[in-house]
Image (cartoon, rainbow, N blue to C red):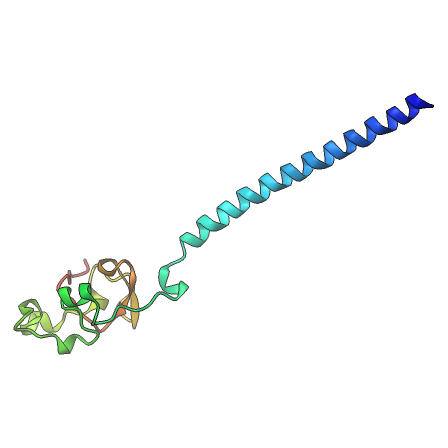
Length: 129
């Protein structure tokens, strides 16, 4: 009778170990999936996660002459925006603007991919090719 009891105890131990192994396996699978999920989240554009739009009061924006409305740029201070050529310069036709010509806002690489106004302007403006 003692050996049957020992046999059952060994079977129970084996079953418990097998269940633990499955749980460990599942844990590892879930960890890999969670890591992949975190990686995927990091690829979401920052404007979709509610990043604040660049304001004219920020130090970098002031240094770059950023204005939400390009027509209000001080052309004496930023002559690049002056004249007929400057009059056509807007964030939405700049190479650093991640959106299209019709987008009201989109990320700008100058401002760590935070949204800027499509009708805005800054001194880093470069024509889209």
